[in-house]
Length: 147
Image 1 (cartoon, rainbow, N blue to C red):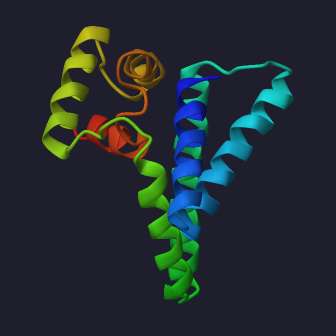
Image 2: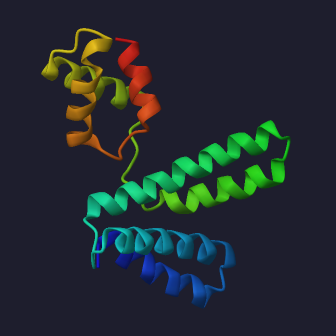
């Protein structure tokens, strides 16, 4: 069992004991997503990187749902999704703040010889190999464009 799945499974048990329905629901959805991907690939365990990608995707999906709810003037749904995001984000690596992100983007850009938009693919490949999951892709792209 991957480290994310085992940690989430233990937290499901804790949430059940605490009768924390919201946390329990979110964690069960995350377990289901990971197990669904295992079934899809026909494997017993996923690599930690694959599990991390599933958890990251869960945050991204919920952020999109928040935006849609706000666009539809449904603050109640947006608040619920934001609460779910807080739960899911506890499983992600520590996210970089603005200054740290800008510094790391400059370092990676210098390493790969980034000269403009044509080099974005090369930059992103290097970025992902070093800092995957530590910053939102949109924030990385924005920092890269500001160079």
